[in-house]
Length: 284
Image 1 (cartoon, rainbow, N blue to C red):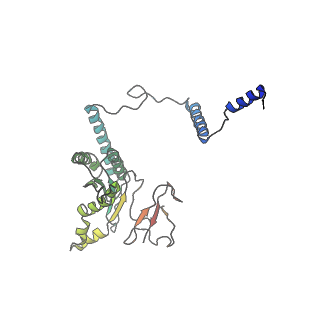
Image 2: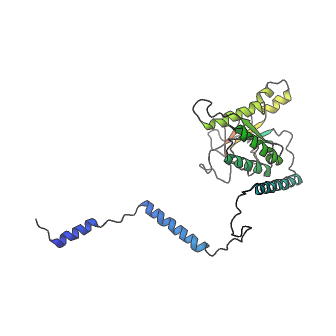
Image 3: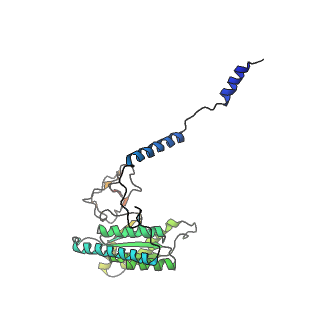
């Protein structure tokens, strides 16, 4: 059957004309464009930061020469010296007589990123006056890495407190043959317990005082990407931590005791936990 030419052209034109369909990625692009546009019009009149020594209003470039690096190290040492003076001028109150020994540990590798994370961890432990010893457990370092890390710890970190330490362990990644790097945390802590704290040796010794001290010690295991905002101790009696709901109900005594360890729920903002408050649970 013959079709009029005008109708044929109309059908061809309709078939060749694509339909406009809005997809989620299109809406996302529009939203991002609106956000950047609003930021531009809001902040385009903001003051330009004053020029620094570079004369371009930018941050100074990283040290490129040995002289600049030496100057940066001196500046850091001066800052640490000032911090130590403030620490000495404002001594904290002494812990009670029955306050058990505290050991705050965190497990790391010897990578550059975990080196600066460890320094920040030590710095905030110094700022909040974390009681007891703070120990970095470094696993799998090469001889050169261990030498460099030891030198930095002795020249910089130990100046914050004589109770800040670094303990080196072998690499436990392949301890069971499956190449799992996170084995370094439990096996590294065990290596520290055996060789640094000498826990088993003290418990089996005939010295009652030494055995009691070892058995009552508080060992805390954290991660290097954490920063202490206040001292972390075994006593949560007057703390604003949120206790995780349990069929057993809340603990009668809010302290770490024999048979009653404490731990934190994984991640921030989990369930009813707030990022402003610690969220802990207890086991028995």
